[in-house]
Length: 280
Image (cartoon, rainbow, N blue to C red; front, side, top):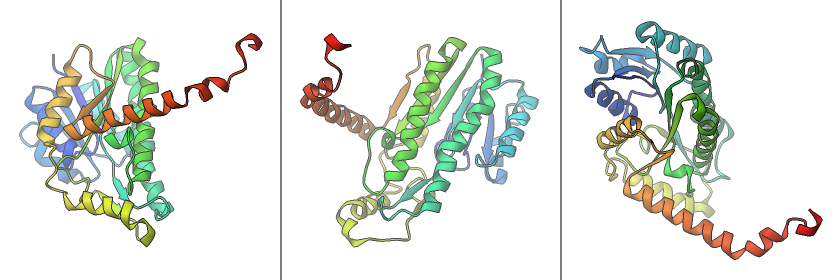
């Protein structure tokens, strides 16, 4: 049985490839972008199963209108993919407040508002799947992208809570955690801080240079990623977290090792912070 997918941020990258894959697998899709002209080619020839809608996730009125258009066209939303997002490069001390706040508006608050708008539909259906595109950077942090990491940690935390709130309603949640893929994220979709502090050149500066330098040559294939996301949504028991890319798997396992080391090393201190058991 076909599903109705609603995908944000479809002009490039994961959103674009996922929209095409959804259509190729016989599903219906609401294709959204800030400039709807950027996604009309996806819909062309597929008008019975696809609709292109203008959507800036930082504008609540556009979110409401886009969801209404989806319901008018298809009558349901079975899968919400919160893909819209931007990046930002700068050491913590270098990062500019307005740029950081704008990133949070898109990556976190826009995602949250989009989810809140669709949840009543899924609750009424007693079914649905929310797919939030996070990052390996939402599980493990890196220099030069600390505030970007913070947005993706927020997405991870919000999504895990949502999964626990909605499971009994038939609503599933999957957090997608990619490593480096050949999208525009490290290109035009990520801005640089205008402030440069030389002391951070060996850490944040070097990592920014590395990431920018391999933009377009990352090992991750967006087409294969799109197929993996569709497969996860179609699975009887989809994962809460779907890692995409070998580097994501290595990074996540390294983070687990780091956590275990600190937890085990400081176990006595941790347990000792409680009142003695006889006083509890």
